[in-house]
Image 1 (tube, rainbow, N blue to C red):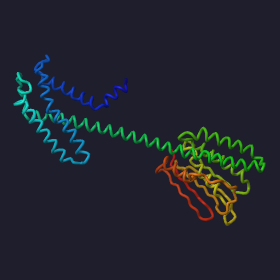
Image 2 (spheres, one colour):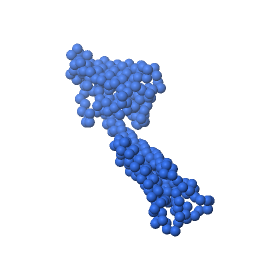
Image 3 (cartoon, rainbow, N blue to C red):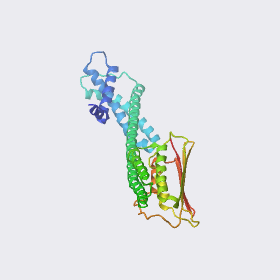
Length: 347
């Protein structure tokens, strides 16, 4: 029922019908000779509505044609012409045409031209306000539809990026676990537990729009721990966390590509260093991340390339979608080391 009423209310034909019904009733009450309805009163109301109709629909036409193009002076001149022609129509009808239209009835105009002009100006003003307000509501509705489509598009892009990220994350973790198992490392059971925690995080926490920053960093800490067990003393791995504010939230799995990129491209540089160092801290609601890895001749197990530019490109896209204008991201390669820095305003 509500949908039917709303559809009728949005239908222009019924809007115009309602407008003229109300206008006719008001004019009838103002011009009626007494409280007893008569055919003469209805005819007199009709004669009043004719020039009013002329003014209203010419005004709607002029608004749609001239105002969007900024032709304001032309609009005012045409409006003045339409109002004056409406006044002329009224007096021409009352003086000459009424006997032809309604023979056998005697009509007298009790109004002066200025009064009729004021009367028609009221119709002009009402039609202007209604037309402009209707156009504004249509524009707002269109903007809302566009915003909804953009939101759906953004969400679809984010879902696609996360769908790319999840298999990549699982592959890297399993690769670390595989290396530990081959070496029969005593840390393998504990690594399986860490991997289980990471998978639980991805499956349950990673599906929402945001998670607590504390949980996100715990996930990253688990990832670092797995890599430390995987490489042991062969690589210098460290992660410094400074998190004084635990109330902040962040998009899930946002920082993971930074870590994966560091371990994927780390190598022994010319000085013989082989290291990945991470620093993450929060200051005044801003998250500051720095990942540094040596580069040179890689000494890591071979990993297949990931199609679609997963990694820092994925991170850049998610930052643009989620934190536009609220982040700084930069990478620097010096020949011996690669540094990625991210500063992000959180809520």
